[in-house]
Length: 124
Image 1 (cartoon, rainbow, N blue to C red):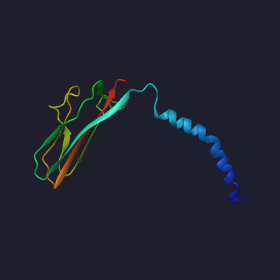
Image 2 (image 1 turned 180 degrees about the horizontal axis):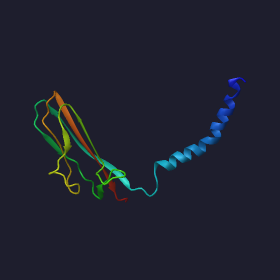
Image 3 (image 1 turned 180 degrees about the vertical axis):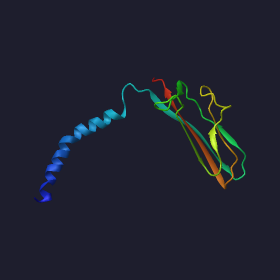
Image 4 (image 1 turned 30 degrees about the horizontal axis):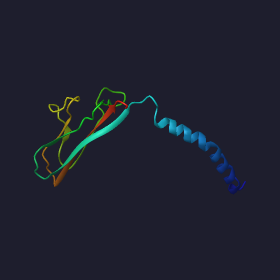
């Protein structure tokens, strides 16, 4: 059988199934009972030899730190570039009123640090 004869059948089947596939995808994107979330970050750059550096992640009003799904850990991401080590500062972070990111001295031509935190916020 010639493959060109199947083309109209495949197109017709796609047109018939499209509304069902589209509505399933839309429903999967945003369950109605989920909390609103947002993300805040702080970042900085350093030149070679710059000493340790830190920054504060702002905590939005009406929000609490989101937990990484399935855990009790804060939902965070730390990114860096260059020869430095970056982490959340244990002394400068209480996860309720202040969140401080910290990177060690920059030992390459340049370094960057970025600290991201996800929050669950009350719906207006």
